[in-house]
Length: 340
Image (cartoon, rainbow, N blue to C red; front, side, top):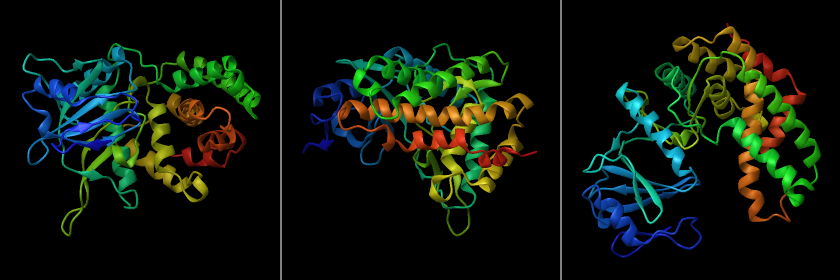
């Protein structure tokens, strides 16, 4: 992504969705802004982002690239619900006619309030507990909510998509290790189908508790860091909370050699349960959820990267897949889930 001399964003051919200056102008006009007030913020894997404001940013414009058009409203309904319940996440800005989403030349865009903050620092000792607390509050606020639209990027949906690709794409299905992966994915889907029959506590799953998605007010000499906002709900969906707890553990309880750190796992689960205690059914389901999360993460990586270089792509190069296999072969990590 580059910027033109007048400050408006111009997208180069490498960007999946090419958007001209006039499209950006037309989108921002719905909110009473002009393209000159927008500056390119990032080109993410899932969306394109602009800061809007002059001279300081007041809003963030997101242009969706991956999320299917009919699934965007799930995210918007979820965010409205969170804001209305006082949960820290940026508010959606309506157009002059009250619309939450603008469509111009096939580009779906949403404007959010800008939240000042920096990504949470994973090196700070309090960060893990703060994020666990945030996840538990998210689950309390959304308990029992489905928000109407089934999202395709659930853990189960990603695993199914990879299995379908392995079974229908001769090149991918012929890769070294493909037969083993197909067998595992089929077994996982059977286990997940059985899990769906249980009455596990459910609601909104954020699914991506990476540091960049948790903004904090930076620590200073007098105060520690505090949560400013949880952002980026591209991967969110409705489902059992154990899958979000699996995301939390995978993102924040890794130690040396990218393997699970048992004290860190226990610390996260203890902090989470101060806000929302796990049910016996959730405790029983959590090992499967951790395996499924890592398998789904592997599916996302494979399905995004294999098409770029089909002939050269190797399944063995997927770190999440290696982690998934290790989770099925080792049981030492299960002790990290043993929290009263």
